[in-house]
Image (cartoon, rainbow, N blue to C red):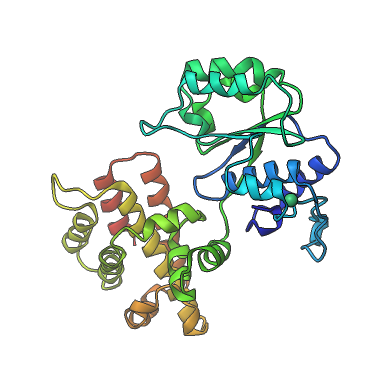
Length: 344
Ligand SMILES: [Zn+2]
């Protein structure tokens, strides 16, 4: 993985690349941000840029706002090859075990390997994935090394839950924040790396909340059923159906008692609703029909368009947004669904 092939996160990759070029990269880094946005890829790209045998200065790279990469790995030399395939002896990766934790023994083994100078590379890089799964003892075992890293060693931890790390670990690391990706970037990666068709990629990206990981997870969810539910929600609201009918839809969103839908799936229903409202806005402003995110229900959306013009559309969108954040804050599923069904 090279910096220039990473989609999005230009500010961050520029920063990393420049620090590597000037040899001022801090030895302990924490890449924090939502799951599935490319933190791990950025960590791998950093390891590669630190050890590449023929580093390049990419030209023609987006240089607006001074976002130009100072240095990048070639992606082809022996070192880049080996890092890519996970075979480079000086690039050590640690990931959670099947119980979703990283134990102290694993950390001790890794630290033992950092007491010597790098064997084949210029820098030894220890990459710790989902660092929030480090058990507290494992984190404590790391502390001394994070504070005084062994010579020529860089630690990079990635996490979507920085708050789950001990404050002592966080305070010894330089935190680099990764944001969510624009939907267009998510779609671009799905097409480029995951063999998705353009329309399918756009449909998934519209629901993925800026995360490639989430877009891929959606492939496993039964999106067509969830889409039907979202459409029903808008249709009942458009007809200004009585409260009874609307609450029925809320019930359908949550699912029958004892077989309640997973909160993640409920969130997808809300995101689908938001994405349909965006489509409706596009339809109302005469945008090319091929560009809407939910072409499968285009006719239904056209029928809904006159109900959700102007302020009502905007208010509906804001309500869905509030419902989503309530869901994230763990507010009861039924409460959220009922509230939204009456708000729209
Ligand atoms: Zn290289």
